[in-house]
Image 1 (spheres, rainbow, N blue to C red):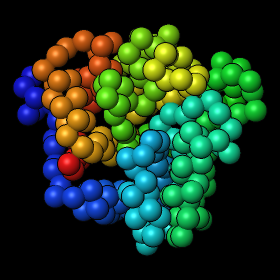
Image 2: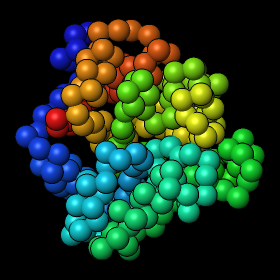
Image 3: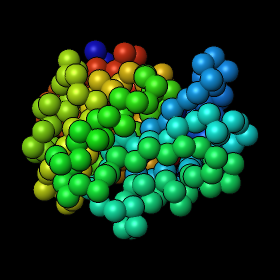
Length: 236
């Protein structure tokens, strides 16, 4: 399969324009799902890239009380810690109109993601399936969600036939232990988008597209197994 057929890339003139367009697409998908079924789910990623997108989406005019927000993955740290994805979401997305949304965190009071796995699995299973929208990010090593090269549970996490919804992950590059939605749970989302910014991330994506080993660059697992060409939005 050629790279052109494996992804559907939209490039924007600025990061502001990208954030505005992605917020609009997300809001449209959530509104449509609410109109059809009365509720919608949104799974988002952490890091610095989505902040502007979160801030714009937080002002979208829709019935946020019918939306449940969760995370694609999470560091196993309290939500008061600066590196917590939950803190990022609460500070930037669950504001303004979006303050009415429900939030399902992926961290519990357990000492480890392995210890908290039963509770997090139950939370994930209680979400309406499939996810309405899932927004992925990508690291400079080609990881997405907590699918890290060298991760102790990477093969399980990216198994397209796996039945687990969430799985713990430990990897040197991850720093903290993590918990992540698995590949099947993410690629089943009705709207699945990879959001990347900067020339470096574009080069990483280009490298992923010309290679084949998903264990070396786990974003390849998403590209290879998504039911349609992966929707990618990018701005320099």
